[in-house]
Amino acid sequence: MNFSYYTLRPAHFSGVFERKLAVPLLGYFGSLISCLSILTSILLLLYLWPNKKPSNRILSFIEISNILTIFPMIPWWIYFYVVGYTDESISSVPLCYSCYHMNSVLPAVFHTASKLFTVYLAFQRWVHVRYGKDSCYFCIA
Image (tube, rainbow, N blue to C red; front, top):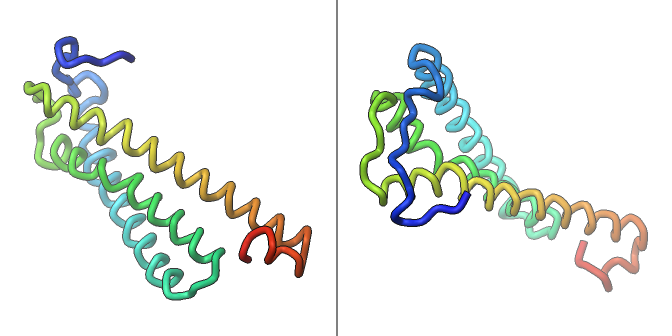
């Protein structure tokens, strides 16, 4: 989609889901699962970060990316589904842009970063297994 400042229309969320289904699933259950996921990622990050091994650093970066994938969506879920603005539309253009970027663009960027860190971790472990003691020359493992 090609968005510009003048062609972006206000977002209407009332037609996407029925309110009686959207509020419990996306509002309460989705926010609860997201908050539990962020809490679990923070606990893993607190466990992994003090250990200075490179594999743990990469796992820490994966957890940071996972937190940043979920975090931007929670305020909008609360705004639309918990506070009760599902039938309302976002009337201002800056809020439209903010909603679009926080629900679509930022999660996609951080999720892609998480996947790239996972690929790097797999490559690092492959080098360590393939070359054994000589792997210190290729990457620190």
